[in-house]
Amino acid sequence: MRRYRAIALGGLLLAGATGCTDFLTKDGVGSDKDPNNPREATRDQLFIAAQAAQFGMQEANIGMFACLFMQQCGGVGGRFVQFRGWYFMTEVDANSDFIQLYSGGGLLDLRRVQEISEEEGNREYAGVAKILEAMLIGLGADVFGDIPYREAAQFESIKHPAFDPQAQIYADIQALLTEAIADIESGEGEVPAPLDLVYGGNMDAWVEAAYTLKARYYLHTVEQPNNGVDLTAYQNAIAAANNGISAPANDLRAFHGSATSERNIWYQFSQTTFGQDIVAGKPLVDLMVARNDPRLPDYFGLNAHGVYGGYDAPTDATDPDDISPFTGSARNVPNFRQPLVTWEENQLILAEAKLMTQGAAAAQPHLDAVRAQYDLAPVPATLENIILEKYVALFQNIEVWNDYKRTCFPRLTPVPDADFGHGFGDEVPGRLFYGSTEMNANPNTPSVGDQLAEGGVAGGRPGVGGFRNPNDPNACT
Image (cartoon, rainbow, N blue to C red; front, side, top):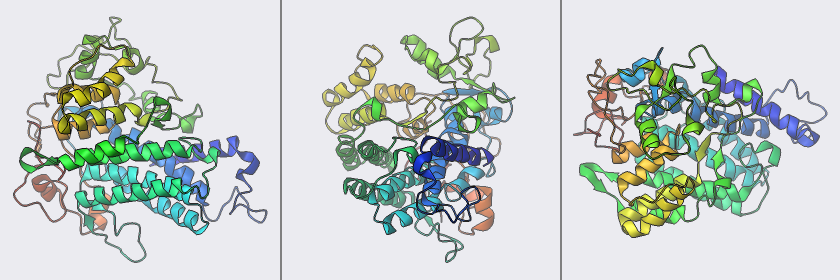
C-alpha cells in the first residue's frame, strides 16, 4: 500500500511539473485554497491517483503471482519460494490487493471522478474513468471470482456488500465499457493531456483500448462446464476486437519516470535486497531460445555462462549459474512503460476467436502479423500456437494466467507434491484467496474452507469443487 501511495504522489507531482501553467488554476484549486494543504481531493487528483493505483495493481503483487504460477518467472528466494514451489498462500497474501480494488485510487475514487465529471457535463473525462473502473473490477473478478460490485463503494448505506456472481460482473463491465465508449465519442468535454498518464489526452486511443478490453472479457466467458465452448462469446470478441487497438503505438501502457516514486515496479523490486529472488522461468526462456526470439535481451539478462536460461520450478534442480536474471534486460530500467493492453493481444484475440468460429485460415493472418514483427516464420494457427504466442508477447502480464486457466496452454508441469494443506494438489492455482480484511469485516465473504471446496463463489457452487473460479471450471491437469 505504501508503494501505491508513493506512485500516486509521484504521478501527481509529474502532472504538476508538466502542466503547471493551468494545473493549479483548475476547478477546486482557487486563490482561496492552499494547493499544498488540500482539504478535499479534486477530480484531477483522484484521477491521477486512480491511474497510478491501476499500474500498481497490474505490476506488483498479483502480476508477480501470475508470473510465478505461469513459470515465466522463477521464485528462488525469500517468500517467493513458497508461491512458485509450494503454491502456499493464505488470505493475507493478496489482502492489500483486495483492499485496493475499492480504497484510495480504486472504485471509490473512480466513482467520484465520474460523478464530478458528469455534473460538469464532461462526458469524455467520465468515460475514461469508466474504462479504468472496468479494467480494475475485471482484474478483481479474474483473480478472485465473485466480488462485491453492485453494492460496493456505498459505505454509508451498505456496510456488508453482497458478493456478485463473476458472470454478472463481466456483463456489468461490458455495459460499462459500452457506456464509456459512447461518452468519449460524444465529444463533450476532454481529459487534459498532462493528467492522462496513458495517452496524453488521445481520446481515440482510449476508445480502441476499451474495445480491446471488451474483447478480452468476452474471452473470459467462453469456457463452459464439461469442456463446452460459448461460440457467441467468441463472436462478440471478434466484433469488439475489430474496433480494438489498431497499432502498437496505441498500446495502453503504464506511465513510469526516472523519479524514485515513478519507477517501473518490476525495476523497483529488482533494486531491493530481495530483487534477485525472482528470476527467469525455464518454460518461457526455453521456448524463446528454441525459436531464436529477438525479445530475449528485452526480457532477461545473460546468465553466468553468457547465454539465456531459466529456473525449473517442478524439479528445483537448476544450477544458479544457468539462470538468467531480470537485471541487465532492456525492460529492467526505471522508465519502462509496462504494456497492459496491446495491439498484439488484440490480434491474438482475433486469432483465437476466428479459429474457434471460422477455422484456421481466418485465424492465420492475425498470428502471422504478430510474429512478423519479430521476423519469426509463420506457424500453423492452432490454439496451442496462438496461446504460446501470447505467452511470449504478454510477458509479465496477468492475462497470461487467464489464458492458461481457459485453455491449459502452455503445457506447464505443476510443482509436484504441492499440497501443504491448502487443497491445490498438483495443480496450478486458479485464483487467490479473498483478503483477510474483507473476511473479517464482511460476513458475506466465503470462508477459507468454502473457497477451497467451491472456489471463489459466494454461497457455494454445488457439484463443483476445487480452488477455481466460475469462468474456468475445469482444472488443467
